[in-house]
Length: 340
Image 1 (cartoon, rainbow, N blue to C red):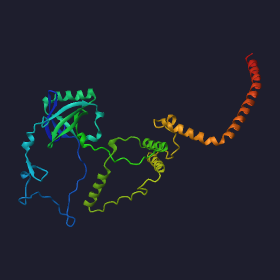
Image 2: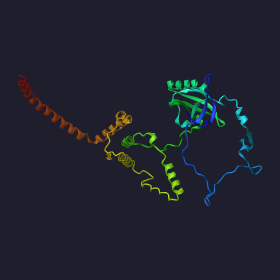
Image 3: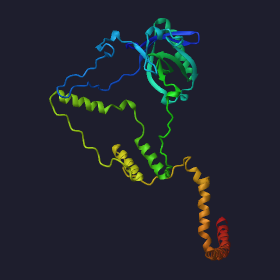
Image 4: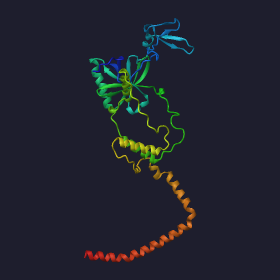
């Protein structure tokens, strides 16, 4: 059982089936946090909350919520106001549809949670929903309310548990306008082949083998300063940063470095052209007809020369045929003698 404090208690609404659950965080933050200090004496910097009307500090028990109107007026909103909202998702994760997982845009993915069965009565319906999700190979789209707003969610099976990913609303995801390069860029097949070679050399990785090197370095600095020692200096960055002037050279060097790091042959040989969909236009597309037209245009000023060469070829061919005809009977006779 997951011994983590729940952040929300409610139920999953699966048609007329209600499944009591507890919502717990599925992830945890391991990053190192810092405090703000006064650089002259190391004193902590703290923020105090003041009421601007009374000009005095107030405690958390005196602080509530308020909505600022367009004219600057503050409209108080109480917890009772929010609890009385006429929406079914106030204490319910409402399943609204089941869709294939690839229908969900990864850009919409937000925080992740585990749904923990709320006691023994929830075990059977919880297991039923989990097995139904497994068999359908789909995910459930849900609506729920958390921290003062209604949200979208996605339920999927992780091990023997049901996990929920918060989803952004579609209008919260920006379109990638103005992100891609404006100018038309042509990538050559040789460059793509080298990029493929680099991808193949880097290969796959077990995500369990990756770790936060920045956090480890910060921990070493903190430990050194706590022990009164001087932290190790970071190695100087390698030269060659900035603009890539020669893309082919950069790709070749990348492949060579990746192979060396894996103990492989670092030599970058001429790569054979790959039979991919991008090479098919060369065989059947308009580029071939253009190059053929260029060849015809280039050969047109030399018609007399080409005619002479064709005549010479014909003479050579006829001479070869006569010679072959004379030699043919001798071959047949020899073959007959062998068979006899």
